[in-house]
Image (cartoon, rainbow, N blue to C red; front, top):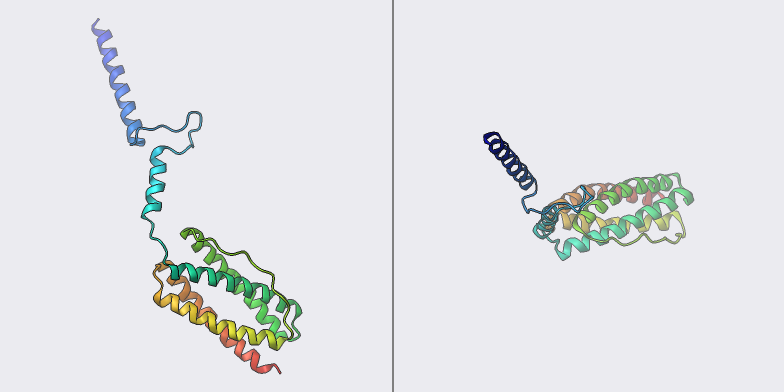
Amino acid sequence: MKNKSIIISIATLACVAIAGSASALNPFGKTPVAGNPNAPTDASKRTAQTAKAGAKQLSAQDKNFITNAAKGGMMEVEMGKMAAQNAQSADVKKFGNRMVADHSKANNELMALAKEEGVSLPAAKSMGKWKSDKDYMDQMVKDHEKDLAEFQKEAKDGSDADLKKFADKTAKIVSQHLQMAKEIQGKLK
């Protein structure tokens, strides 16, 4: 009888230990969906909801910047591709290739930030052909002047730290593009 009491005590302690371990792993007392050990528990659902609720909302200015920067970046890539293929001047072709490379990289970074912040980006639009290399470069100067001002404003006045950092870094690249565009524009007649 004494051995039977010891065995029952050990079994009871083992059950309590197992239950305590399970409770420590899942503090909300819920188990995953039967048959699916990878299904989210109520605890993981709560953690995701808490993270979303605690996430800072982007200001209207930040959202507007993301949307405009995405539209402009996609336009630069599309027009850059056309310049690389159709331009008469070697400088304009080279500039077009640079637009594709630099703006594709910036667009990818911006898409990652937008996804992180839950902002939907517009789809890329097909661009029409320009009349001449000079027409393209005139447009690039005008666009990069406008873009530079927008990126500098966001870097200075934005409310999201990651977006401000992106805007500051990209403003430096846009400034280089503007300088290059002006030089090429001056060579074209």
